[in-house]
Image (cartoon, rainbow, N blue to C red):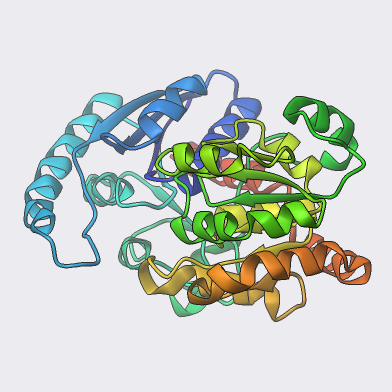
Length: 364
């Protein structure tokens, strides 16, 4: 029986793929021992146990991009996390450690390398993050979602797998009536889905709020995931619009995707992988607040191939809702975007990565 640590997290974009890999490992080897290691206070500490897995937290924190006193505590938290990661590795004795990104993965992978434990890194983005670039030098296998990653990692260790996604997102088209009933919508009406990631996105929220009357005038249904911080305000704003519903977090994303005729979203790597799988027309609004401008590069990988549309964050408040309504009324554009985006779906990504983990764990 193999023992595996999966490390990383911070956002849904890291947590849900990690859970998908764990589920795939259990399918292949039902008695496998899996331990997650995440960052204290982050969403993985809630979502991982809810999915049926054990998790240990580290006090690790990432550097803030703006000047703030919080950055002074980062080195101390890192030192404490390295010490804790070492203890976890000695106690659990994993055969392999898998890192899915996010700063929580750094202490575990670094310590694993020092202890001679094989490691696998899953790089979600088309432009590798600094942590993974450094850790990749010592990783046994690097699983990527995009081609051309040899500029960041040793070519002989790269495997193109795609990004793992949440279960149940294939064939969502068959769920439209069920989804409409679940959300209390009319399955015959056009529906716009707006998702700002698991934590919400201020630009998307403000853009939608600014355009609510236009959405109503167009006779379009709106399903709007706001994140918890914006939810109260969004709920107030949608009160007078019968066909607009705000949710702080949508548990049934399969239903949300099934109902959507157009999806507006940030451009995180995990989100893009889900959009490819569901094959719906999408407008991407890359977040400007991520390292190395990952999201713009992710979005451009699709817009270059006419597989999605993009609206810049600084133009979204005026342009986003009009562009979304225009796309909803353009049957040809919707069909073209759907046909092109689905070409990049990799539904077996989680299973492929799980097999690589077991291969590493099985080496003497």
